Amino acid sequence: MLLQIKNLTYCYMPGSPFESRALNKINLTINEGDFLGLIGRTGLGKTTLVQHFNGLLKPSEGTVIFKEQDLYGNKKVSWREVRQKIGLVFQFPEEQLFGETVFEDVAFGPRKLGLTEKTVSRRVESALNMVNLDFHEVKDRSPFSLSRGQMRRVAVAGVLSMEPELLVMDEPTSGLDPMGRRELLEQVKSFHQKNGITIVFVSHNMEEVARLANRLVVMEGGEIVLDGSPRQVFREGKKLLSIGLGLPQVTELMLTLRDQGQEVRTDIFTVEEARGEIIKKLNRKRG
Image 1: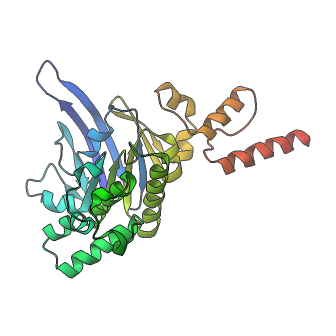
Image 2: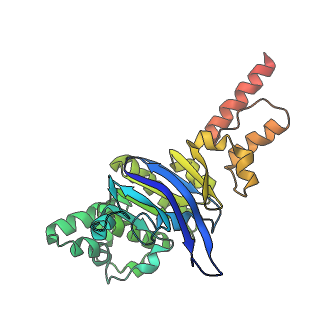
């Protein structure tokens, strides 16, 4: 267990006429090596939840335990150390770039740790490589001379340079064009596979999480309503649709076939699986 959320409740403006409960008794365990997709409609608690992971918000009730340390029940918690280990990539992170060069921007965090310049340079090069940016090609360029997708990858590299144990990415593809989205998703998948870093990927896009995550957690109304493998969650396709979430196009196709009386699986979310299932169905008919 890397991180555990226990009975976490959060209210905005508590005690006022405008009090609003954003999270209600959330319980969630994140294990080392997980690639967890946190799914839900916009404005229903996903970002509020992940901001409790490293102290950006304090729970109204409940707590968060990180590596057996109670973050909100222990006054001696070093939030500086916690934020080194739990990296958070906000929406539109490229808007937070400020360095004159890509190197200076990505190096900012490691330098704040008091590391030697040799170690800083190693971390910057490693982080840029993880997001598929050539260190020697971009290190001396202004980050603002890059494409939006490249700028976002620089921002992600700035978080990776801190060598976090848990990386939280909040709607990381928002605002990118199709090519930028595809490139970023490929790099996220690649550095998870190569480095085994634990990732929480916040999104409302089912196509994205179907390609990446090995576990999905679905939120609705400030509560967790589904938690399981992608196959287990997409098996509940009609429930997902009933709460206003889309499905991968392949899953929608299989649900349509099922509604038309075809005995096909509905927990499928890749083209290859759908092709195999449809061929199997046709062969059964011929037989």
